[in-house]
Image 1 (cartoon, one colour):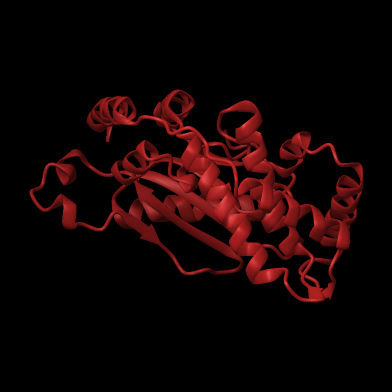
Image 2 (tube, helix red, strand yellow; image 1 turned 135 degrees about the vertical axis):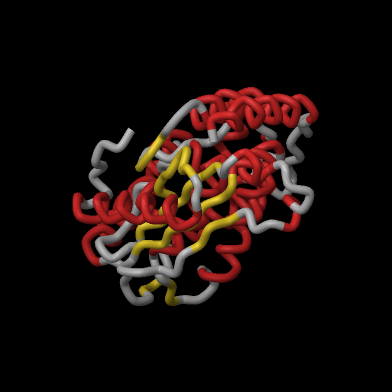
Length: 265
């Protein structure tokens, strides 16, 4: 899947594919999956937003059979150049973190913007994730993210309006997990399905319009209806204790996927 997406310009798409190919050659790896994360994938990017490219790669089989594999670097990172932020994880790292329902790899696998998908990795990983996703971890992650962002960015009379989106998205993700019991979509418009409050929806519409038209704007007066809803939702969630999920089956199945992919490295 490498079709263009409205959030990705043709020039940026071409440049990203070139950089992915360069990463493969420079590090002697094969990229199994490459995707967009961050505001462009979430659906509330500005014209000047960065491109947040993330990928999962596999190395030659012998690399994993070395006695010092635990000490070897399992990430590839590059500095941001021309608004393109690109880095990736080794397959082994990605699968180990998936076993723990790590929110980063969960969101990578569910991004609507995919630059490259080769072999069975992504499809199989998504299928396993649907079976072993730890809803409690997702709940606590998104609740913590929302609370932290609210305390850090939305306490003054003047705030950057885009910061509301970095609080609203995780709060709506928590609601999705509560209502549907599975992985929350990363697209903000889909998450809004769980919100029935009309004044809040109208405030969000105005917020999105302003962000898309004016980019990363300066601080402006706080929005009372959003402030009130966020405070009430955070207070409600403090009293919610999600059920804990089990993980052993996840690790066993992900080990099998790793062994299946390794001979094709």
